Length: 493
Image 1 (cartoon, rainbow, N blue to C red):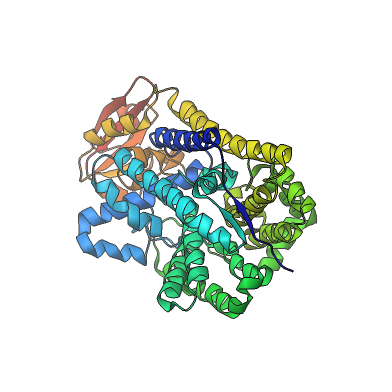
Image 2 (image 1 turned 60 degrees about the horizontal axis):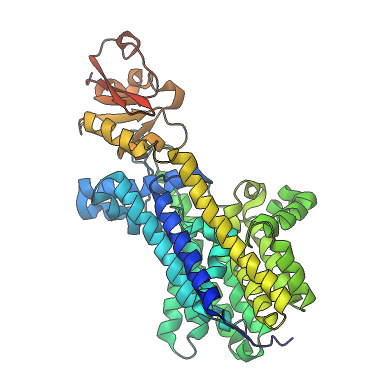
């Protein structure tokens, strides 16, 4: 099968201006949304990631360079009185963004860290996506590549939040591009393999995107001569992730103390598919093109257009990648659709090739281009809606409440919050501690908590007699126009 070569450039002054306007508005709406992070879909997962970056910053501040053991032993923010070591994903994002939280307030750190994720996505889409697509025998200009990147639901939703998916896919795109371009340049090949190792280790579900290498060798005649090299590079790109998630994760669990918030990776693809079942598999394959890797609600139009143009192999690869992603995660993936992010690369290939092949068919091409614009607009709308809902149009600022509470808490006091499984109040305050949920007022009567000074932060307004009998208690209030927290200082036993 020969994959013919096509070229596509967004032409016309007005279309070019509209393209850059949409990208600028997406970036601006992302910047606006940063001030309400963690926000939007999977806020809990964002909170964990931000917390780990804050934990690394806290370790750096307290222990200096000794804190670099975080590389091998990542720690969570809601660590209690333990070390907080967790068998998590490789903490690449936390290591890079942790120092930002030493530059000012917690919000400053979140803003700068989120900005770094967005800039990485812009760079990968503008500079590397066109180069990568050339190996699929389709050449697009950089502004079209940006439109495709930010019209795709899953990619755009991860490009401006603090989650490892937002760095994993760009890194795999960058790494695979270097591998494809390497030729006889072994330094470039090794660089590509290294970057892919980091990307997959940061989020193992993007491993399905590595299938682009053997797929290109199979479909594109000009690349068949380097088929064995590409297969070798794909295998070599999975060495560090395999080490991290198999022997190293078990080692970490054997020494870790405190709450474990990450499930140990399991590689049982057949069992995972059986867990999902035929009905679930078909439902996911229906759902994801509809509101996943393509522009929202219109993915099936792209699928049908691709099939009508004879691009059935690209479609087959996309659906195979969906099934591969399901086999990695099982039924868990129903509520964590961002685990499909690795399949987005193949959706981008489909859209690029369909756009290029319909360039001379005015009506069809105009419709498809409108769908691309629609995808970007929908993602802009998502940013604005999340910001408006979380801030009530600048009326709510949890970071402000957290700052007030932090100013009331002495550095030597251990923080206890009524956070549940996810450390939201801890993030807003900017201190690690114990997430006690409904038992927040009782923790001070337990074990090691009996002998240390505590700062209890809760939405409740308890009476002093209800708190820590026999210990001196001082109750303060962190109050803003939209919420009121009790800050309860309990002296050491």
